[in-house]
Image 1 (cartoon, helix red, strand yellow):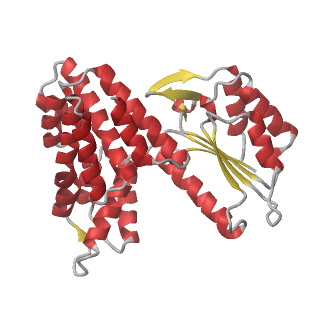
Image 2 (cartoon, helix red, strand yellow):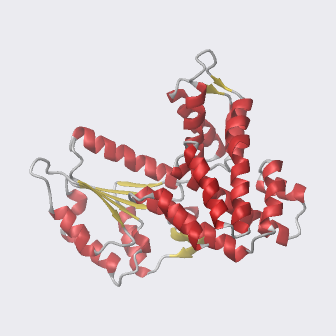
Image 3 (cartoon, helix red, strand yellow):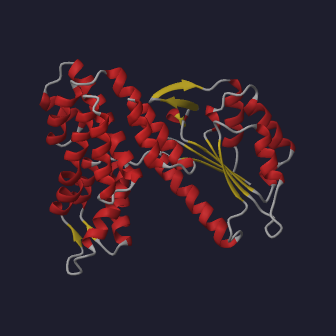
Length: 339
């Protein structure tokens, strides 16, 4: 069996793969010994064949999860993989082969395109042949970005899991303060829920809960961090991060905050170059005025090349963290030390 998940909603792709993996462990492979995750950018064709050819003594069925093959630059790689899949009739096999591609999307339902730093480009011949084959599979699905209502529904459902309620207006406030980033939203919901559960008499998430715990509590620390980065004060930057870790913030939450902050600074930088005034930037980016006003001062301390470099490094680390185990705290510190 082949499952093909692609699109620009990497959060939902990640969720779907986890659901499939959990179901496989529950129903087939309680020890998880026959589940392998392979990073498509790095694997070789023989890696795939060796994993499909191996099995445990106790479980016959296998699950392979392969992410982002489109980034693999080996000559004839996709052609070789496609020939192997067809020759061995993998589509008819009881094994489960999951391909995920967060760099692909179906442009206006007219064909797949690659996404690189938000720029689109057509597939080359071998890429087109391989992914058009996958599109014909029964379990091929495009996972598109959440629209606003879907995010509101997602927020309300997540809070319901903690037996908490949130109204549409407050859910929208979370969306605004997180730039609609579902990874950050999920982290914030978890944090807010744990705080709210300490008060058994109030099960409603209110605006003051959001402002005090999402916005005001950590935003100043992020601005202090980007200030220290702009002045190349690496020691101070690392000290600020360490205080965040000591405050029980998870490294993946901090990474999401950093990615978001530097993306905002880049957007502000580009708006300033277009001579947008503060009100126009607020209207264009749809962010809280506090964030814009602070961001304008900081954006002037960076050039676009530096901001893009920092963003690319952080985004690459985020993708690595979602596809394989890594010491995220050390990796973040390493990026900072190289700036």
